[in-house]
Amino acid sequence: MGQNSSLTYITQIQNKFKEIVGNKIRQVIIAHVQKAKYYAMISDSTPYISHKGQASQVVIYVLIENQEFRVEESLFYINFIETKNKIKERISRVIVSKLKADLLDIVNLRGQAYDNAAAMIGCHTGVQQRIHYTILMPNLFLAQTIR
Image 1 (cartoon, helix red, strand yellow):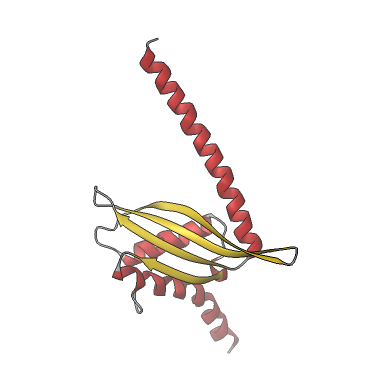
Image 2: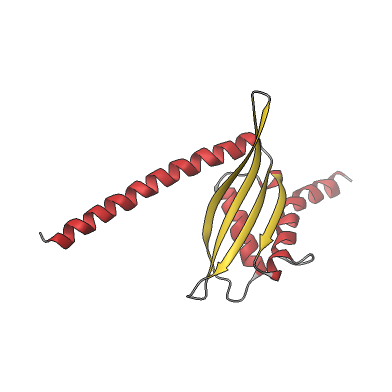
């Protein structure tokens, strides 16, 4: 075995270690958000050299422990979202599916903020409005059913 093969092995171990630690930290943060119940989300995307966007998600929540309030802010990495055409529906679906995958109830989402694109914040058809409708649709259906 040459030197190159041992370097590759060390890199694989380091990557696995980072993945395990990252997943544990993520689980702790998600548990805090679930305990707090209500949260707000800030999402930002940055164009990448390959013409695909890299999106990040910041979740802000208030944690109450022993009658003390703590405002926590945690950064979640979502995914690479292709923003070449800035498809609002696709971006909305990715954000909502990521929240669901993290077991964060979208009904408890109390605030949204977006940066970097008019497509994200359009008041009628932007990502923010689409996610808002995703939250409201079950309630509207229930209200119509009761009538």
